[in-house]
Image (cartoon, rainbow, N blue to C red; front, side):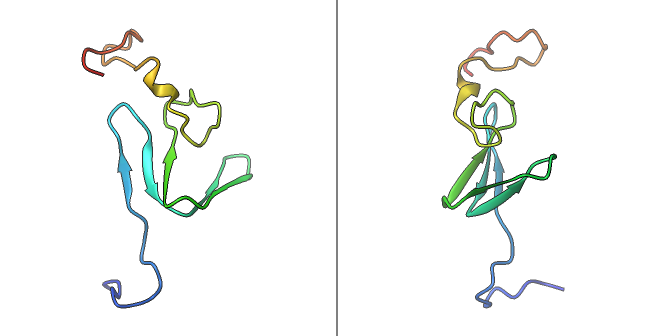
Length: 81
């Protein structure tokens, strides 16, 4: 069944992975962690950390910019990253 685009109810969230960065999700959102705790954000776009370097995990604090993972697994920054 196709979603009703004329409805006042939201039909879903847009999720955008960023290369060598976070996953951006249209907010507001509630994020349920594996331990059952919930982190809420009322921002219109929420950045979720996928590198696990963030001090504010599960939210991104741009820690991924300090050192990017390389394709070869060496941990050395990639050229142009």
